[in-house]
Image (cartoon, rainbow, N blue to C red; front, side, top):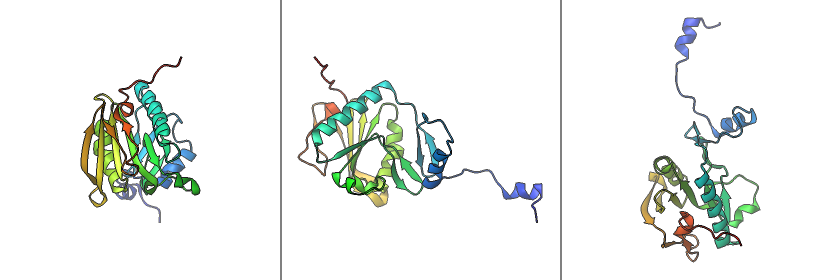
Length: 204
């Protein structure tokens, strides 16, 4: 028996639709929005990301190339690629450093593949701390770095407590300091290069 209009009105109530990653991917397949709109799926909600500003673009390019040079063949540097954290969450970290063993399989990048993540924060510091940090912790990302460009500081979160969705320790590094990832303690990274306080030399 067909529902009457009053019955249908009572049965369907306003609310939020929470997407799964599978449904989220189908939106892309259906060309649901322009290709130049950057989005992430976080706990079932679709977030439209702000356009990347010029300083963010240059900092990303410089950081990726810097990390590639420093790690050589010991690690791979993934830039702005999708990372599924849960059935209802898929994000695009600015930089994810992974071990070369990921190349032996064809599966999408998983949290267990990631050694550490770097988010480049120009205007997104609050979001990167309040939203991204617990997501990465609950997903088992061993360490999380935030390059805070306005302050030229690097926040390094470690000592993972995945069950609580947090990192137990946080250190702030500044230009002149050196930081090493936990997986590769012998790789010494200049903080000035990570927060773009050191400008690359012009060619010629």
